[in-house]
Amino acid sequence: MFIESPADETEDQFRAFVTELIVSIYKRVPDWLEYQVGERFELRGRFYRQFICPAGSVSSQIHLRAIQPGGISRAIVERGEASGVRHCWEIRSGVETEFEYEDLRAA
Image (cartoon, rainbow, N blue to C red; front, side, top):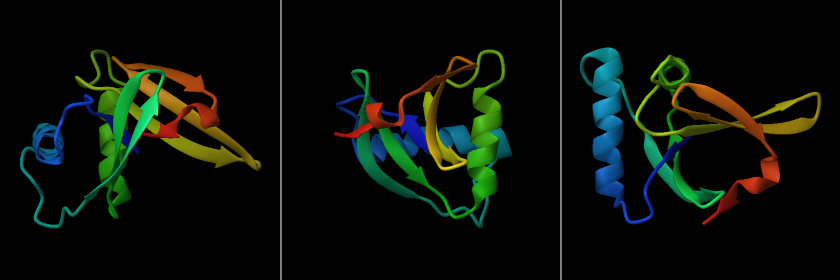
């Protein structure tokens, strides 16, 4: 999963946003929660950071929040593969849009 991150945002600022998002979902930061901030990516002039969490339920909860009306304050991007074909989706303000896998590039 990738979470939108302004070009000038530091990793600490990004982590603060993620913490706020986690608390909005779980009402606290779970004791078991561990995650890493991965590489920065670019999609159509917007930047994203990779959110890497071994607990897949966390990404699922972020996804569920993002697709609700009003969504979350930042877009997320997800990648997947079905029948050997790679797909990517951006979810912004509760709206999911598919785009070409190759359009998401390391920044």
